[in-house]
Image 1 (cartoon, rainbow, N blue to C red):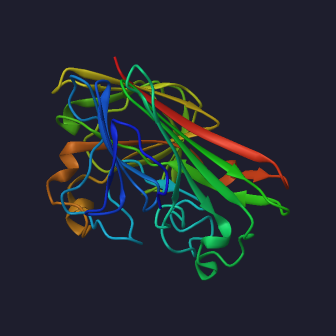
Image 2: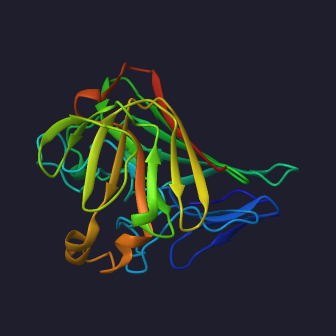
Length: 290
């Protein structure tokens, strides 16, 4: 958990989950140790950027619907559709706090760690136990989240992602820019296609795009544009469950589908990552309000 001294601007919290709260002149937010989960971020003078369901379970060992869940070491139920829990073990494990600092400008820098030896081996029996994960978070007027995967004496093969939920005024008045011409796999239908123009929303959307491009979420309702830059990611997932799927999800309100869009930096399926022994890999996402 945390045994380090916290600077002004970062305070420990223990309810509903253990973690830290950030409150500086540059911005505010919440990070839970359960899943190294960035649950909230609001830059100074702005609306909240991350979205969190009012119906999600905030309990140790359970996944959180909203914020930035970590996907590791598999996506969904894995390539063979046989893995559980959904999206892997990193988002339900308890991480340790390694570092907490605040710059003179008010940017909080937080580092969380997960040691493979501390993870329940029954959840991922084929995974070597000597890996380490580090999550580096910089939270202020912008938000940067970087996942570093460090292999031990054995090679690591995995899928990964930063499953970011972004708050929007109205999903039907929201568009995603930056994926024109990108090939994508449509998960509900199993088909593949090429994106033509911007992405708009009029039904369930669940697509894996082959793209390393910077993206923009243009929110007409709130007159806001979010810029999403990434490093170490060859794909982007765009997801909104729409009406029927939202109604069937126990941790999502029937009408909450209107309030968010997921734009995720990922490496999944045929873009899975291999890290050689004693080597490392990183994936990051940097979010700002234009």
